[in-house]
Image (cartoon, rainbow, N blue to C red; front, side, top):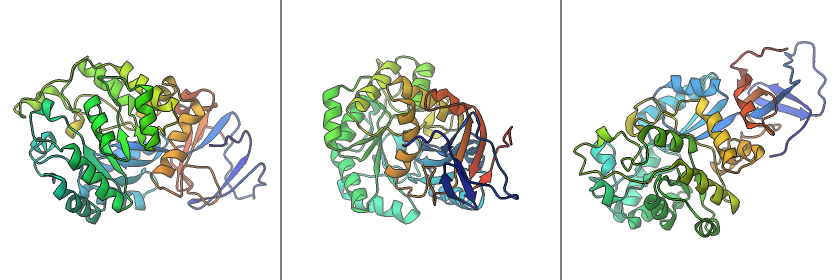
Length: 379
């Protein structure tokens, strides 16, 4: 990500038409002052759970112009994509559709209508069905059967789903908030791991092995922090309230949870150069499997950026992780940069977030496909 200290940007329709040190405006152009401000590409959240189109509008108002859903009904995903295609006041929308989980396992016991994967032999059919429904990447729930007390996907099954996704040039993305799941997802060669362990710290040796495999990570530190704050040092082994697990096969709590484990794991991964992407796990309060940990839409993106900087990323690296890097690794070729020909999804903030990441919260204006969402207080 290159920082341009002074310059002009011309928007024409839905695209960025020109970026230059100086552009002479025509009389009929609307000019927005950038003095004392920073223009950023629209932010991309690589882990959300959308409940309604209103959630997508909230994201956009906070400068998050693209969202990547990591579990959701395909019918809802179709409606959300349609809204994003027709409206400029909501974030663009992408989805995994249903996530892969074990037949009779924790997730299927809570959401019985969700299709499952009974073993490696079911992987191809599961992925093919998701692609037919419009899934753009494949989510997997990696669950320790010794804590759920239920038949979860084995490492071989997880690997088979990841392989089936890879054959179709799709990312496989593993839900892995605890060490057992983190190790299992890595050993199964999934392409992206979302969350980081709350019950242990990843060390440099582990990180180097992941680097050799070119693994990608979406830590969702804001969710990690919220979970520890809401559930303390032990929790049920998925992001759900303990009461929601009653009768679900004798669910055992995972002890020893600490936000320091998550933060220090990100520091270890970042130190060896692994790609760290920005995602929040934002969701409606109490929605689905997200449980009691509150991660609000939109505003949590700015919290996540600050937490990543606290974990060792520079402000520029954190901004890149929420823009150009997210766009590149999720193959969104038309966004993530302030560049001629790119989609005019833009965020104007007061101050300089390349030196003080908290400046992203001070939003002056947002554009979605060139259309302004929030009025600037300057001209």
